[in-house]
Length: 493
Image 1 (cartoon, one colour):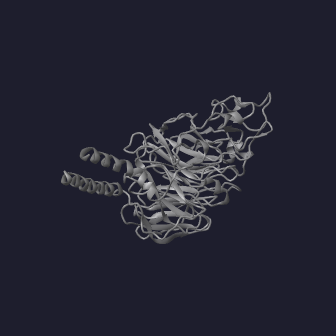
Image 2 (cartoon, one colour; image 1 turned 180 degrees about the vertical axis):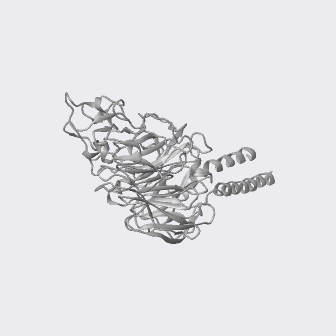
Image 3 (cartoon, helix red, strand yellow; image 1 turned 120 degrees about the vertical axis):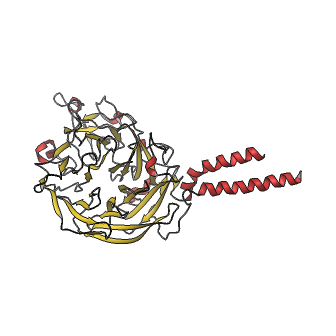
């Protein structure tokens, strides 16, 4: 009897060791790195985040070239190529850094052609292209000016998107010149608009005011823009107005909402949304309907700014008059990028974070589940964006002690890379079980989790989440390991 018990104990111990090894096999619990994060990230169960590079000057837009180098727009400095080394187990580090373009006017936008031979970027007034050799990480031509006449006194970033459904079409976003830009009410000014330009038949530089295909106007500052890879639907994320008043009441803490907007297609598919007025500067989207005086609409519906009276009421902002958003987000979270996975089942959004909200909100990376080209959640939802990566102490973010997410890019392995401008960092976000981060979504092998705090981002912040270290790995692998362990115990006990 003693021999049998001893044998069983030994067998259990051996198999428990195997289970632990199995649990740690997908993504290493730690990597040998001398880098330290400027802030402490928290991750959702099933995910792990690692710092890949730091010491960058205000990194904004990011894009991988065809040789696997990460191209980074360092605002007011130029474009830098980071060569990355993968040691396995999700341990990714920077092996070298090289200046591709030295230009202090470049500040955010970046794109690269599908063949990897043309690089695109922008400053506040123009969009450019260069011939690019990814093997040497060098440009091989002088810049070609593609689009001009976009200079603003405020909201100076010009995000670039090359359509995959309509090759040769370049989408450019342009925001307002101020918080409430009266000129945006005039479609002829080109303010607060998103346009697409055909690069296939250029005879000279385009003028943003006069040329291009209008996708939408009345869009205050839609920095992030993306194309659903399956349906070709174009979406943007909007930074809405600050310091809002309604009928003499300050409602800026709870309204208006940030927005996800649908802008139509570039492949010739007809859409009633394309080219419409999306509301700004007269109409804004409700987040907390209870705090808006004299408003009887729902979350996601639009209302009139300022004072209502017999001649001015919310009927001016109805869906018949203005194009409403597809989703609403908590006010002041400042969405700056949106990126779909290849399956079109999830869109990832960076929320840069607030500057005038108490308490601070945003400062995180979230994911929205999609199906058939549309968000799974309805336009009235407050829980569509699920937090994946956030700051551990959002309350301290007002003192600039937090990372602030900006740009997103997929590598060839389906891992998600993210820039943080104020901390000068690049992070990689991975599934802890080793599957691709890009697998998240309704029709893919992965699933959208509960979020970093076990809840969604309806409040604009996360809490009680796991730090981006070994605990982030353990959260995903522990369930698999426990399943093995319980199976062992059921057999031997």
